[in-house]
Image (tube, rainbow, N blue to C red):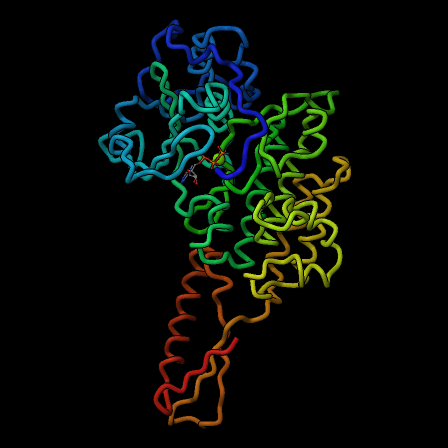
Length: 438
Ligand SMILES: Nc1ncnc2c1ncn2[C@@H]1O[C@H](COP(=O)(O)OP(=O)(O)OP(=O)(O)O)[C@@H](O)[C@H]1O
Ligand SMILES: [Mg+2]
């Protein structure tokens, strides 16, 4: 985690005190059964959170009410086994909630109930900045909301003071690392666009729920990527139920991350789904520019990405020459980049009502994936074989730009293309007459 949270406070500090024992013993580890008909309204955080009440009330409500979510309850012992006793060799990272470890569920852990799979186990740091409220929010929201662009919560552990969460394992880690850490290869344009579309769909899903959910902590480190770069939202610790009925907003203590939180939320505490749209605009800008939302290592007027980039977004010349990530080396569709930049501009409006909804964002972004007017990158001139006319020069387009983007079919096609290219490259006339051109 590189950015500071706006507020670090436990909402239910009493919850973690060890003397509060659950009134009823926790249910045995098993898949919970449905107690609510699927059509009944989603359980909200307020339904189980009773400020001032001991944790026992919230927990007994939770275990009784969260049924149907297919969540598994793990014992601490099981999670020790899964993560090889929380071994540092399984360490994935650390955030405000605590440490995250990779684990593996084999067929001995929950025979017949859970398939063998890799998982990520998040352990609440009892001395850390977050607490039971965040843990509970994860269980309540991710236990009930299932969508291809939300990380799947497999289960949880709530034993004594231990609070752990078990998620599907996301092979490519988080977007922040992929985009900004030097040791990762540059993400190609279409992969960036695919990620933006994915998370936009995740947010649109949350906002369109009958009881809308405001995610509140949208940022690059909370976007996780699977093997095929499908993007999923993680970390629902700060998520909250949105305004209902006549209400236009809810007022909360300001929580979130510097550089991503919407200006009206920071100044007034007024929270709407449009606050998420602003944060989405910041991440879209990060994808376009390859720059962090806050970067103290840059000259002072460039440190705040939105302040620096937003005025430049509508000028096509400045967009191409100043704003777009130089590591893309111009390999993007100019038309798609312009449309995405205009969309980012709108999402980053200071007036929440001028921002598009996430549904509109999806409708605008998704068609851009089909704009393939991407200049070819490095290509190869190959001197033809003896059998052919020696004056022939073959240009072989670099297909790397599409790597990681597609489904299996595309990957297979790409493999074929690569094989073909290797074949071309090995054709020689005079020793090593292969010229790489950029
Ligand atoms: N399901 C998962 N699969 C793979 N890696 C994960 C998973 N969940 C989290 N991680 C990794 O664990 C690390 C810590 O994640 P975590 O969400 O706790 O912190 P963060 O997002 O960096 O900070 P913050 O507390 O501000 O959200 C990150 O590097 C993240 O990529
Ligand atoms: Mg996170």
